[in-house]
Image (tube, rainbow, N blue to C red; front, side, top):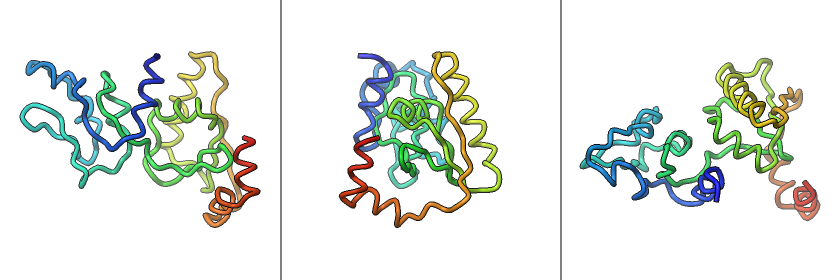
Length: 170
């Protein structure tokens, strides 16, 4: 099983640090990628091992993406996806790994409603597209949506019989 597939499978559980963390195996480990990646200081060391505070964690997924040993399991951040298109919001942009997972799941277009796309999002998309180019894959496309997507319409599409049929055809 490939590295990316193992990482994707780890996304269905609550956030926690697994025993495969190098700090669980050796008291001499100095890895701190998960701690450094957390802007909310939700990942801290307790008795030399990383612990995730559920009170502080925003579920951004950065610790999952940065862990070199895939020793953190949890959910991908909550993102709005409409018809296999990622909706750009004012929230924290996805990591490169998260974008590659979304790409593999069929999300190949980003839609934004603002006049100008947020700089952080532009940088995230640019880095992901650079990686896709290295993998000989087409890049993400970016489109500006002039009318607002109504949450009501998204809900109807997901839960109406016709919407379910359309979602299954994608």
